[in-house]
Length: 234
Image (tube, rainbow, N blue to C red; front, side):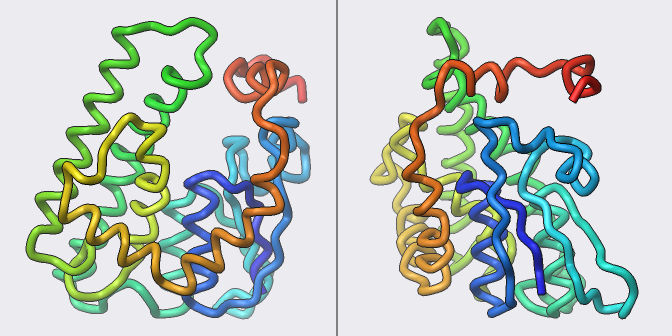
């Protein structure tokens, strides 16, 4: 049994996608990031960076005490190793999955996240910042599009955690001021992942929380105004 601490953001969707693909039993604990749930002591005990998602594996493979894992990339790796699924066994295939997983957590996610921030949430529109991150998002889409030219999935012929990591960050392509028609290989891959039953089930799990009110001004202060002193005071 997996306890999933979750909110329907791209990083949250990644983990739900894996759990649905693998058929693991899991319970969702919503972490309303606009309300500040990520700063509650119980959550910080398992996610010290006050970010979701996080998991607790109640039945780890070593038969020991429950294991908590934070950071979406680390969670995907942990679950792949636990189940023996969605990660190749050969050294070259594993290497490729790791490359593209790290590409997403170090590049696509942060750059698209800044794209969202300056385009949608910043209190004043800064043209330079918006252009900077829209263009960088576009460059990264191009990188993935070229890579997918002769591949069914990100790491080759088999679906993997690299696909699960990347897909949720492409879902908001309109918000990122991109056009998937400019990236035919990326669009083909995107449609393939979107059509998977597990992907559809994972996104359906987020719908009850996605219907909550949009981020309020107070929510923006919680999400974007934290400092080390503020976190220590929680």
